Amino acid sequence: MVLFSAIASGADTIVIMGSDTIGSKLAVQLAEAYRTKMEARDAEVAFEISSEGTLTALASLIEGKTDIGMASRAPSAKERAKAEAHGVDLRAITVAHDAIAIIVHASNPIESIRLQDLEMIYSGEVQDWSGITPLHVGPISAYTRNTASGTYSILQQVAMASRDYGENTQKMAGNELIATEVAKNPHGIGYVGLAYSQTPGVKAIPIEGRSVTNVDYPLRRDLKFLINGNVRLNAMSNDFIGFTLSPEGQQIVRQVNFMSVY
Image 1 (tube, rainbow, N blue to C red):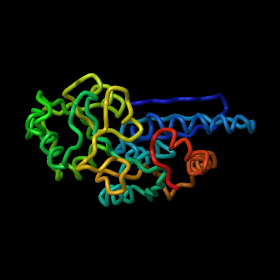
Image 2: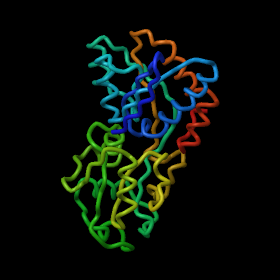
Image 3: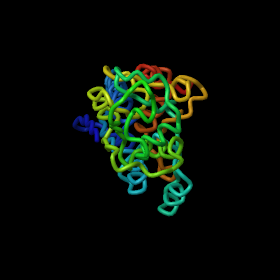
Image 4: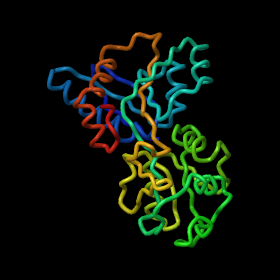
């Protein structure tokens, strides 16, 4: 969990909850830039940003606890139906493009990995690197996100044929924690959003020869803000979304190492 709070007396407060992929870096930097911009106009704005996973964005919108949700995957038909049953019209706004990077320790000689390999690693079917590549030997330490994470769900669906994660996988609360653990462990492997793939001590490896920047990379995705279309968004929150989609906001997207929407 990452909790960012910047509250000024008398300021309008924008509450943002959900995806760690967005919330840990991008949302915080967007909030700081927007707050600075408003101060130049003699306007005050405060932010409360909580990053516990995409599922919390959906739950918080249903419960009316957040102005903007953050999601690293699209809401499912079941989630949309649940939201509708609670009077919530889920509206998704793409604010950045991303790819889930597979990272290993910088010393790991492996140069590429197959989706089938990821399935065997994360299901627990293969537990030593020798079962994946002749270039590396040692017990695999597979780091994963928690079940509230949209990234967790996408990897399970795309790379694991929806199989369950193995008992030996180690759940981490966020992207930064996964990158930190892999950087310390020569036998580690994890998956993170692009913004976290350049952590010192790790390297991102292609999937079946396709790098994270390739248009046909199998783990590409959109990062989204979610709002309730049945509730009038307050003016400051609406303006913040506009700022995020503006050239200035999208420059921050690129600086964080995600891909802009244009």
